[in-house]
Image (cartoon, rainbow over all chains, first blue to last red):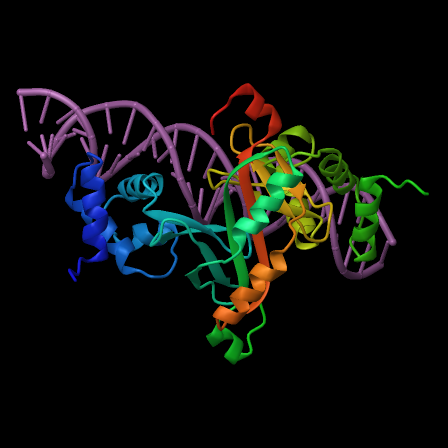
Length: 144
Length: 144
DNA sequence: GTCCATGCAAAGATTTTGCAGGTCC
DNA sequence: GGACCTGCAAAATCTTTGCATGGAC
């Protein structure tokens, strides 16, 4: 089994799409891939300080369009980003510390099938965020 | 059967919570209740023009905290608001025109039960947005 | 060499905050 | 009358854009 770093894979996909691989771009990808938690555009820009804010925002949008990162809606309704490891997945979000993790949900198709039956909509996609307390916060006795 | 306007109901609930009912506040509530589509804070502020922006934002946040309005995440990830007609519900969002409607989803509990089984999280809430084309856009042959 | 990407700084968009004055109860 | 609310304007965020320069291919 060949082990390819997450970042390398993302870079290849960008190259395949005809995007140029510049140093700032690689650094953004590297950083995004190395974080397995969620982050805001501003945080990312701060961490990659020498790189211009605009470049970070532009690259983030590029990755989003390519489906290489996804947005997460936190419990308070604010939005942040996260590397997208799978084609389609959902998020489990901790209401206390804001940690997120990907989760696979079984039986979602059954729910969507009901929507198709009950409405006139042509259903093509969906987003599900499940909120709760992560094991650590639960143990700490955190509330919300 | 007594018919009580939507707005009256919301105002009562605010009063019951000990909030003062001022003229600007009623106007915001009135406006929110009268729209059955989604809107942004900025749109609302513009429509209620003589009322200060800050007041609109503050009132909106108040209504959100009280669960009288809810946030909707559109297909492009942007967030807007909508009167919350039911205690708990989900949204059906049109990818083409951005219209939204409330939808009841059956069997969601089964999906959540699986999450509880499969993770260590203490699951307490969830958000589901279903994306598609509304009947009108579908008929128009709109794509996305 | 060509075209795309970058960086900067400025503009734009959105939301929050301090404070003086006004209003509800 | 007291506490809360409002409006204004300024500030704080967050994000996008124009343009000249630089780098990938």
